[in-house]
Length: 448
Ligand SMILES: Nc1ncnc2c1ncn2[C@@H]1O[C@H](COP(=O)(O)OP(=O)(O)OP(=O)(O)O)[C@@H](O)[C@H]1O
Ligand SMILES: [Mg+2]
Image (cartoon, rainbow, N blue to C red; front, side, top):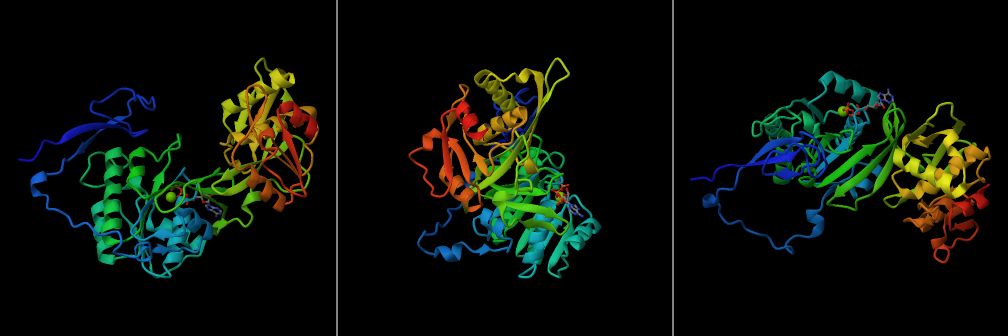
C-alpha cells in the first residue's frame, strides 16, 4: 500500500513552508499568502538501484557544451553561453523586454538549429509583428501558442529543437497540479516538467518569469532553486537602458551584469557601459554628482541629481527616484546634523540618470554632495567621481571595488576621485587626483 499524500502549505511571496495554513507568514510578514501543495512520497517498494557514473569517465568539454548566442553581454552574464541541458529563468517587470530579448536570442540561434518559442500570453500575430520589427524571419524559428504543459512536452519531443523558450511560466498549466495558471503549485510543477525536458533530453530550456512589485518572480520564489540559473532584466520602462543581471548561476559567477539599450530593433549591447548612466555634455549641471558602483566585475558610473527648492508646505517633500526613500531621509538627516544645513525648509527631489537603482551604499556620499550642490547653487568640481558610505556621524566608510573604480574612471577620463580615507595607503594611481576624506565636512572642503 502506498503512503498517504502529505499536505504542506507554502507562502506564495517568499516560499516559506509550514505544515499548517497560517494567516500571516512568519518569514516575510505577508497576509493570507499560504496555499496548499501536495507532495507524493516516493513509493519505496518499486525503486530499483541506479547506476552512478564515475566523475572521471567523461572530459569536462564533452559535458559542458555551451551554445553561444553571439549577443556578447548576454553570453558573458550566462557564464559563456547557454549550457546544453540546462534550465534558466529570466525574470523582469512587465514590459521591460523579456520577450524581445528572447525572440532575439531565438532568432540568432535559429541559424544553427531548430528553436521552439512557446508563448502562453501572446497570439501568433503579435509575435510575428514583434519579429518583423526586430527583423527576424527564420525558417527554423518555430512558434507555438500553447498553455498546456503536456502538449508542449509532446511537441518538444516530436520536433526535437536545440532550444526551447517558454514565455511565460506563469501562463502555463499542467494536469499534475491544482489551481489556476500562475498559482504556486502550477508554476512549480510546470518548472519541474521543463527541468525534466532539459535534463532528460539534453535540450536547454529558457523560462520567462514575471516579477512582482516586491522584486521576486511572481508567486514562487520556490522555483528559483529548481532551475540552474536565475537572471533579471532591470531598468525603468520609460527609459532605454536595461541591466541584465545574474542572481543565481550554476555554470558561472553570480553578480555578473551586462547593459543593453532598448531600441526599435530590440536590445542592443552598449559599447561603453561604464558611461551609460551619465547624461551628455562635459560640464555637470548644479545639483549633479557622479558616483561609481560595481556590478559584477564592471564599475559603472552613475550621475545622481538633486533639486533642493524652498518648501511652501509645513512638511517638506522628499522624492527619491532610483534610490531608497528611507536612505534619502537618512542622508538628509546626516546633512542637517553634521553640516548644520537647514534642510527642513526645502523640498528635495533625487534622481539617478537612466533609472538605475542605487542599491549600493557607496553612492551615499555622492547623494549628499549633490544635495549640497543644489543647496549652495555651486557645481561640483569637474571630472570628479565620488564614492563612500555615510555613517550616522557623518563619517565616510569604505565600500567594495575602490581600486577598480579608480582605474576604470581614469581610463574614461575622470581626473578627480573623492573616496574614503580607509584607502589612503591602499589605492594608488598616477595621473589623477585622489582625495581621501574622513567625513562629509572634508568632502565639502574638497569639492566646493
Ligand atoms: N517600436 C519600438 N521601438 C522601441 N522600443 C519598443 C518598440 N516597441 C516596443 N518597444 C519596447 O519593448 C518593450 C516591450 O517589450 P517586451 O514585450 O519584450 O517586454 P516583456 O518584458 O516581454 O513584457 P510582458 O511582461 O508584457 O511580457 C516596451 O516597453 C518598449 O520599451
Ligand atoms: Mg512578454
